[in-house]
Every structure is written in C-alpha cells, then in structure tokens.
Amino acid sequence: MVVIPACVSDLSAVETLYHAAIAAMQNTPLDIWWKWGLHPTREGLVRETAAGNVLIALGENDADVTGMPAAHAAGANASQQENPCNDAPADRTILGALVLNNVQGAEYPLAPWPVAAAPEEVAVIHLLCVSPTARGRGVAKQMLAAAAQTARERGARALRLDVFSNNAPAVALYRTCGFVDLGEFDLTVGGGLRHASHLMELAL
Image 1 (cartoon, helix red, strand yellow):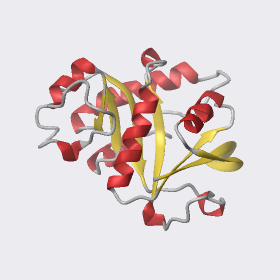
Image 2: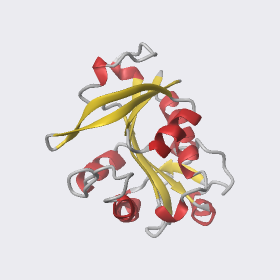
Image 3: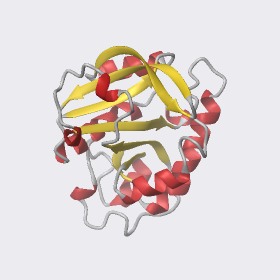
Image 4: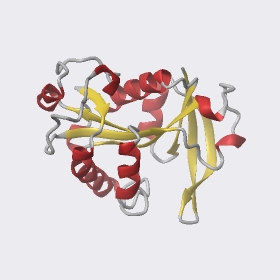
C-alpha cells in the first residue's frame, strides 16, 4: 500500500469511494451525516486536488504504476516522484482518501489545544474515508501516518481533526495513533446543524 496525493484523473474514483462510504454508514449507529453535494462536494475535491491536498491510499497493484515500489513506506508523497500524475491511469482502485489543509472549524480557536501553534502551523484532516471493502487492513493508520509526514514537510507543528462522538471506532483509532483527545465539544457541522464531536490533536 502507498499513500500519495491524488491526481485529477483520480477524481471519479475518489467520488465513487465517498458514495460507497456514505451509503455504508447512513442510518447506522456510526452515521456521520455526510451527504454528497453538501459535504463532501465534487467542487471542493477538485479544488483540494489541484492544491495537492487530497491524499489517497492505493493497493499494491495500483501502487506499482505510480513509479514507487508497492511496499513503499507510508508517508510517501509527490515530492518523492517526478511528475507523479503523468502516467497515472484513470481507473486506479482507491482504498482510502482524506483532505489535508489548514482550514480549522469555527470552534477550533476556542479549544484548549496542547500545542500552542499559530494558524499557519496547524494542519487539519478532513473527510478521512476508507472503502467499505478495505476495512480492517490498516488503511486508515497508514493514511494518518502519511498525513502527519506531509504536515511536517509543510512546516506544521500540530495535526488536528474532529470526529463525531458516536463514531467510537474512529475515536479509538486516533487515540491509538497518538492523537490527544480533548473531549467532546458541540461543533457546527454545516447546514445549521450541530453535533457532539471530539476534538483531537497530534503534536508534530
């Protein structure tokens, strides 16, 4: 498995991934209220892909065509390749995706973050998603490791995220990966809706 920035040619596969994840979690105890077209949106993913902010996890067969060894360690990124999108096929099987930028939620500044970082020194994970057919294979852990490495390379001192309080498996995963859990907060989730969510931070 390898984690790399998505190419424009990956967008259809990324969209398919999010559709599958939303369908699998909708109306279950782990429902995270995502609705395609509101959150996430294709326009947002296009914008973040162009900025190099969408990271995708590829399986061994698809990792081979990126020019990297299939067994390349998590944390690989586009800076380690020349023109990584030149030969990328449009039909790569994507096991997971996330958005990594510095956009913090409206309530983030109010939280007692352990790392005293300026806004430009903070990286934020959004829309972490693993294909329903790839769960239990360590995809999320490798993506988190890659996100942390990319954030460090960008000069960030802290990696932050929020996760719905009903998503206990995700909260446990982030804790296992070293994130400090600040507890539950009532966060704005869009469309005038609010939801109890954990704010979490990884010192870089």
